[in-house]
Image (cartoon, rainbow, N blue to C red; front, side):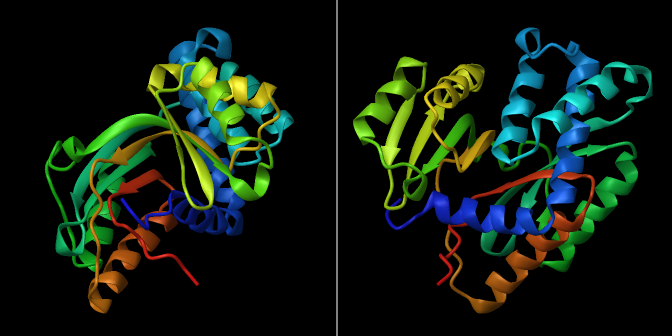
Length: 246
């Protein structure tokens, strides 16, 4: 939609993440452990692990930290007892929210997520109540401040590697892939020396919602902040067209 800056949202997310880098590394460490348990330690034969490694690199996780995590998980497979759970619900004015968590105690996580929704004047819904409003896609953002090359060249690298779509925003380029093609496209961009602001398999809203009431904006930020503070929460997806910060 016009005026919607994906990079602004990602920058906002990244700045928050940078302030809590330890938490991000812990979150990704858990994802590595689960991926290794499910499919083994070789990313060439384990797509889920390859995807997590791409996410780790996009978050500037050092290679030796990634390797250590994989080795530790490979030797510790029997002790990995985390499982993925997804919650769906609504924020103020019907903003759609999906919460992905990785937990060793589903009762604790469900109570914490429910509390975050309630404190922000939202409510948890049933499975499937909002996920139909999102598409699961690989999304790679290249900031214009990090890329001085030709836009057509970048587009050709992405499309030749299997990307579905390429678009130019005011401050960035967005590359969309099928989830299964994400690893190959990410690898091709790495080989071409492209710096990526964000690279992950994510849930992309089909439509965006705006909040104009100050109380609603405050409530929505409250939900997001509480979920962000929860160690079990891995990712939060929503369709709020967040205003760009000055």
